[in-house]
Image (cartoon, rainbow over all chains, first blue to last red; front, top):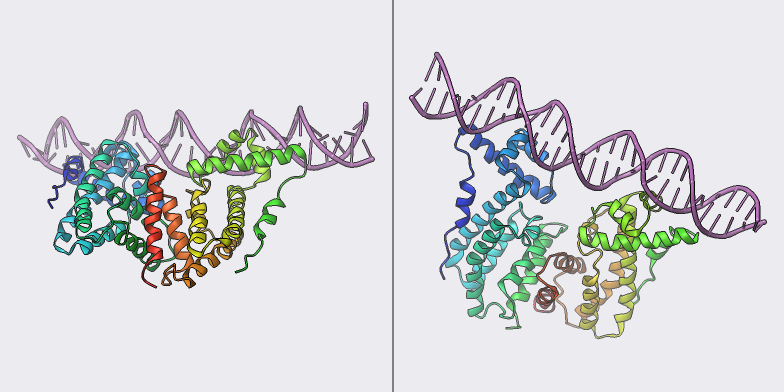
Length: 193
Length: 193
DNA sequence: ATTGTACCGGAGGCTAACCTCCGCTTCAAC
DNA sequence: GTTGAAGCGGAGGTTAGCCTCCGGTACAAT
């Protein structure tokens, strides 16, 4: 059960400017985008993001020529973290490892609304990100399957989309989201295999 | 197990104009909105809808003063159908009745993307619709619970949101959506009770 | 057939967001 | 400290969608 290192981080890091002020602005933009995308989805106003980051709209466009560039940079960041987490949970028992990784997946507020859209993007970086995520999480799923803890009549892609769908849904509160996720995961654990 | 008649239909029917051409336009608008909302979500362009319906934008606004009016009219229509279906499935066995109703719920393409938004609306008509839907589907769930076919540690609201989340998610194809829905429903059927 | 009225449609003003462009500022190399 | 280049920011042109308004049209009642 090997997990590849993170090809995504270079893609993102290479864009970060060298000058001090520029780098600060770059980070502020990513952080702001994280928040605004989380609140309003992937088609949030770029001017809102620039305003929140405390920079001019021109600066935003210099760093991220298109909305997609910005979105993908944020997204890549998250995927990066997810890959790292997959490493960290590798020592837990199979089912525990899988579900705690998926829970982490759910917790990402940035892409909570936007991930579903990203799942269908065809751009190169999206493909790379998805690939990375699959390489990181897929083995956890297979291990759980081999341990007889997860049904074998569904794919990892099925699983991710299921969880993504639930995580993108509005619930009354976090407790409800958790309850529902548990129900769905019970469905993954049982029968059908 | 009684199911209330449909308080929603009056709300909608009362808005339908009397004159022949006007009524035709009204229907065309609803039909067009159904399609466009399904494609682009609840914030689709109203002018697209008018164009597709083959009427002027003015006609749209005369019939539906706000985007919400239009959306809710379409939504109410769907809810209506769902209530009727709840009646029809009442004779099936408990689990079968519940799942076939839920499947019908999933099949609604109109609100596929938009239902999630609607679930959180606070407007009067949304409340009425949700109430109707709960009165129609809730008994199916309770019956399944009493028959030991559905877990009792989740609410009907939990269930609907789970299914709504899955139904609003983009899948590779319908087979995948079906597969995932089945997995989640397996989680509802088992344990935890 | 006439006529009053309800209805039609789209031109056009309004706003919001997109994105470019360029004069000014700030950094860091020497 | 000087200097040139990299970076800044926001004014403003452009587009898209919202919604109003009114001259003209088509229905249905008589």
